Each structure stands twice: as structure tokens, then as C-alpha cells.
Image (cartoon, rainbow, N blue to C red):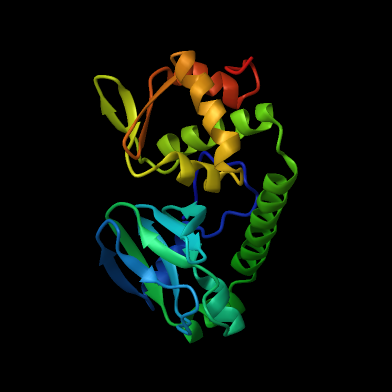
Length: 228
């Protein structure tokens, strides 16, 4: 679905395109923790998230590689390439998605060249993001990437819960956050320690609490640092 606040020249789906998909798709609902499809499966349907957020995980350890939210396609490559699933997809919160058969998804792309180009641009963006994670390894780069990821989880994914201590992100451990930004746990732990020492975040069991969102946004923009 088109985001009026986005400056992306290629929104993945415009409102009109999404309505077109709704006419040929089926709405499904999944509760938090549900598996939408698993790595290695030979299913070939595509999903478009309507509400909620899903976690993309890979490998036996369930390494988190990305998150997807409302308006974003998931598993669309399997519907095009007819190959086994390259990752597993789990619901983080209550998820509502549009299920599209592989023929319906391919026909949509054949008939909508704008959406096909947007999907191609999205695949390049995801590859660029993956490449950046591999080359940015300094403590300052990890700190900024972590700050950006935390802000994204709250602002774009809507996963933060406000409490007396701040904004809590409950489903995420330090390992999960390290995987999301493409860093090792050993690289992330001292950064979180510095953020805690500066009073910007606090931590609990499988959760991180944003105590000072203004300072965190400053780090995300490169205007300040928490680590010495």
C-alpha cells in the first residue's frame, strides 16, 4: 500500500494495485508466534501483509534476517522462481495477510509493469542493505545501525509498548537485535551497555526499553554517540 509520507519513487503497491490483489486473494489471520511458512518448503503462494509485522528467520538457529510490515510482500520470490522457501516467516504480533496463489501473483505482475519494477527495486534495496551490514563493523557503525533499528521497530513497525519506564520492545533479545542489524552479539553487547550507561535504554528479559527516544534519534541521525 502506498505510504503518503514516503519519498520512494517506487512504492511496492499503490492503493489501486492493492485493491486489485484483494479481488483475487484470500485474507488470512495468524496469532503471535505462528509460522506462516517454513524454510525449505515447496509452497509457492505469495503473501502481502495487511496488518502486523512478521519476522524473517533463516537456518536451524532461527537467525533473524529481516522484518516485514503492512503493505510489504513476503515469499514473493518463490511464487516467481518456483524454488523452495529460502527462509521461515513468523508472526510477531497479530498478523493479517493477503494470500495469493502463484499464478495470481505472476498474472498481477504481468499486468502491472509499475509494480513489477517496484518489486525489482525492492529486491535491490534488500541486497544493498545486506551488503551494508557486511561492511559496516566499527562500534560507531553498530551503534548507529542499532539506534536506527530501534527507531524503525517503534515508528514503522509499531511494536513499541509505552510504559512508565519508556517504550518497551518485548519480543526482542540482544541476539535478535544483533541479527537484525547484521552484527555479532559481541559487537552489540558493549553498545547496549553504553546506551544503558547513558540512560538512553534499559533492558529486561527478552526486551529492550527506550528511555530517551530523543537521544536515540540523535544517534540514529549521527548527531551524537553514546559510546566513548
